[in-house]
Amino acid sequence: MKADLDEMEFMIESYLAFAQGEGEEAPDNVDLAELLRNVVVRLDDGSGRIELNQCEPIRARIRAGAVRRAITNLVENAMRQGHRLEVNLTQQKDGAHIVIDDDGPGIRADQREEAFKPFRQLDNGTMSGGTGLGLTIARDIARSHGGEIELADSPAGGLRALFRIPL
Image (cartoon, rainbow, N blue to C red; front, side):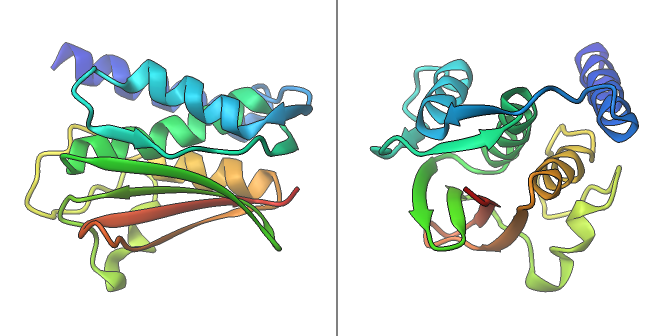
């Protein structure tokens, strides 16, 4: 319970700092592949649950700390819901696509927009242990970079989270 409260306090403080602009950092030219590797290395517990596919360097002008937080939120959500995760980075016409696929229960299409509402936790039959702010913060960060987050069915059977930002 204490760990949940600590996590919620951190998420609320992060969200308030972001919303108030106090958490704004100067954008920098960042290698998204390296940023993804750092997130996966930090979150990987050695069980092999997270597979990071070979990512070619893709540079984007971003606020690295904010994007790292957003991707961390998405990967942590996938880890809570699924047993295996796959993380990909590709360059598309509309920008960089960071895709996180899991094999969990997913989110029904008619509930996906609801999942982005603050403090909203969907009942999908699992105990997520989250605060209900991760997707909200991640989407706000994507949008602040001119991007978006989209949720869809994953080929792995669970949820696909697509974090898209322009280059």
